[in-house]
Length: 502
Image 1: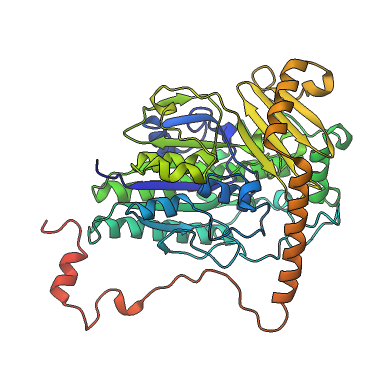
Image 2: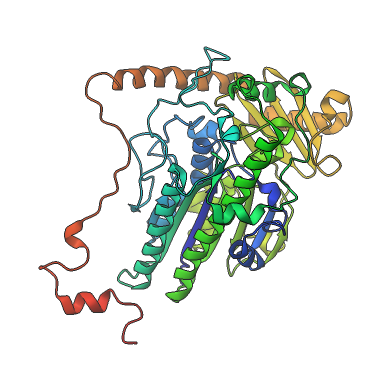
């Protein structure tokens, strides 16, 4: 069997509740809707950890943060951990990344043969939380509500500049693949930073949502004391007391967020058009690293196991999988084994290194009963939090907090904590047993604390004297681009043209 080309499109902080069966009808996203129509669509897909670096390391490796050690946005992703890029490259693939993956540490490739852009966030230990100082806010990098009060329109931002570059390099690479100068199959990962805050959008996309009926959250802000313990910590970490959030701020933030989904849709359209115009076929995965609460209950951004933060869109267009909706809960850690199975990689070579499960069978009408697991041990937590989603139920636990149990079929907005209400005791006990079999929370806490303490020592040392950062510097060999005198012009022009001879 010939190995399929693979195109992975990843976005950042896209709330999966807006993708109940592909993009919601009211979203202006024609390219994603067209892709959805030919994809296996996973209604209940979840991040492994609702924060960028831990969620992405889990996505690439197929392992939870407790296994990778990537607990937060400043935890090193060890070069010895196999990723889907390693597995596919080992199987003969060209592997390339254009865009964000938030790798922390000196290894900035993790199996990618080529990386076309630098990252948008720092790769060092400077963003390390500190469980020894609960409640401490690190002002220069912690989220705050300025992203909400500052929402609006701009033609260029730090984020827009980055994603414009990501799309440019991705389309350029697809044209390069189309030239056929390398006979190997390819896997291209294109990873955008939108619709991640700040909530600022270009006017052409902002104008699409002038009359949008979804500019206010379904569950309005709750009083601080009405929130669960972890949500209160998120409010405190986001410095909510320093801001007066108005209804207009909420409307503008959500409008910009939706506008940036449409911006992404255009960029994705450019990539898919390049693929089609070069007559190439590819298996396509569309996914986000985590979601965004977008003002539901008064919460913003991520860091929570609530649906808006933890649930992500996921769609796979592959010949081996039927188009249609799958409602079974799945995880981003399932991506690694899924891609490997679709590529024909021996699963015996992959499964020792992942706790994820291939989703190919679900796209063929199969069943799955195992729970989806999530972990969180980063800013706004004082000790690790864990979560299990299985069937209609979601269970969360933390050594510091009361347990939570939600029935997502009867209570999709997670308003009724059945554990606190004394309801469903048999279900609660079943989840307690599953969680205890999977996690030792005391050991998990000790591992996180040790990792944080080590990193603080190393970071402070490396910022003294000469500073040699780990920021990825894309290499561009100018002497190998366009026409140079060690090249034959006739051969060059023929090789660089697609299609040839037309």
